[in-house]
Length: 478
Image (tube, rainbow, N blue to C red; front, side, top):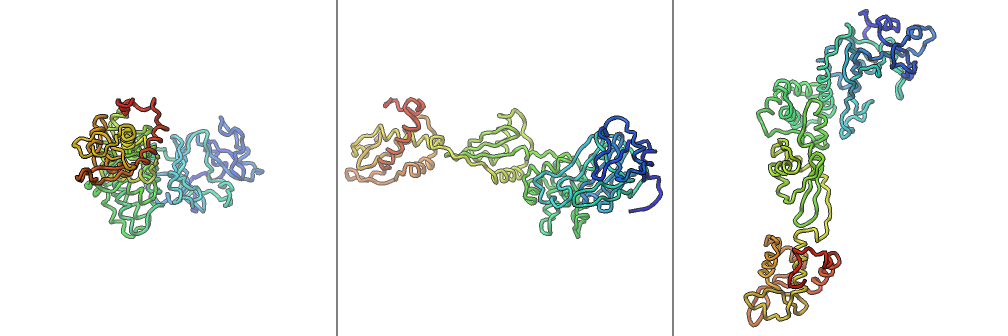
C-alpha cells in the first residue's frame, strides 16, 4: 500500500472532523449502536476513546456512494472510472470506490446458470454492490476490515485520495458495462473457440444495442487484451464486421459455447440494455398424437401449433402471436429462430395422448365401428365395382380402399392417402392383398376380426354410445 500525506482521513478523529456520520463496529463488523441508521449519531467520544480497541470504522452512506467491487477480476477494467477516493486491503487492493452523492442501491450478480464459472471466487456470482442511503454503510480506512471466516482482519488503506468526487449517475451504466466485461473475461474460452466467442459478443452488441461500431470494437479489444489473448488486435474490428454481416453469431451461439440457455445470456447482456426476443420463448410441449401438435410458451401464454411445419417458420409463429396475444411479435431473423427452436427442443416436454385424442386415431375408430356394425358375409360382392361395406369372412374383414375413403368423406373427415394407409397397417394391422374371387384377382385390404373386436371393445369402454360425438355416429345404426 502507498504511504503518503494527501489529506485523506486515516484515523477515527479525522473522519469525525470531516463532519461525516461514522461509528465504530466490533471485530465482526456489527455496529456499536443499535439504531445506527437513525438520525444523528454522536460517536466521537467512543471512536477516539482509548478503550476502543476493535478499530473497525463504518461510514453511514447518507451523502456518499460506495462502489464495492466484489470480484477481483473487475479491477482490470476500472481504468475508465474517474474516482478520487479509492481504497482496499492487501488481499484486494482496489475493492472500494467512494463518491459524494446519491443513487439507488443495487447489487449486480451473474445469473445462477453461470455459477460453475464463478464458484471459486470468495463472493461467488456477486460482482458489484452499489451502496447508498442511511440504511447502508461501508467500512473505511482508519480501521480494519472485519474478521471474516477463512480470513483474518485486514487493515483498510487508501490507494488514492484526491477528495470525494461528485457521483455521476451515468457511472451506473459504465459499471454495468464493466460487470459484463468482467463476466465475459472470467468465462473467456480456450484457444479454438475464441473467435466464435468474440464474434457472438460483437453480434449481440451490434444488433441489440445502439452502441457505435467504435465502442463495440474497443469493448472487444479490451476484453481480449485483458483476458489472456495473445493477438487481441484481431478482435478490434468485430463491431464493424458484425454490423455488415446480418447473419453473424449472436445469443444462441454464445449460449451454446457457455452451455447455458439463451435466456441466461440475455439476462447477462440486459445490463447494457439488450432485450433478447428469444428469451420470451421459454418452454415447448409436444403432444404425442398423430399428427403431433405443439404448445409454445411465449411470455406467460401457451400458444398451440397444430402443424409441425409452422414451428420452423417464424413468420407463421408471428401470426399466431398476433392472433393469440394481440401484439406484434418481436423481430427475430430465421437463423436465430432456428437456434431458439433447437434450444427449446433440448428440454421439450413430451406428453403421451390416448389414441382417441389423435386425429388419425379418431379416423381408425370410425372405421372400426364401420367394420363391426356394417359388414356383410357375401365375399363375392367384392368383385362388384362398388362394394360399399366391408365383408366378414374366414376370420377377416375385407374392404376396398375407395370404400374407406368414401365413408370418411361422408363424415367430412379429411385425410392424406399415405398417412391413411400407414395407420391402417400400424393401428389395425391391415394388409393390402390380392384376393381371388370368381376367377378374378381383386385388390382389397383385410384385417383380422379379433383385432377389430379388441378395438371395438376399447371404443365402447372409452366412448359409450351416448357419449359418441354425433359427427361420428352412423345414422344407419343409431
